[in-house]
Image (tube, rainbow, N blue to C red; front, side, top):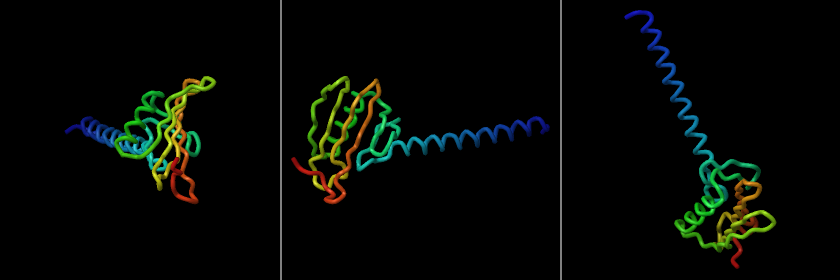
Length: 132
């Protein structure tokens, strides 16, 4: 075994270790972005702008469809306000109907070419969504 092949093997081992670290870091970062906010998960690629406000990693329609499927699949009682536009902003809203829900309303809107998600938490004093 030559010194050259020994160096190549140690370089290959170091490269493999670096790749494993990068893969684990990326997986961890992705999982962190998929966290729940007031009991509602965020679509993939979503980033935080401020408390309860996020920029979706998907387009407006895909984000609305994501939450429609999610709420239906989980059987969460809600009122879906039809998509509407107002002064250049397109909006979709979901209002929680379930007592004890961690969220009161979910607003998805597109403005200036960006899709944003705002999750309104339930009132911490009563701990429930107000039924309509």
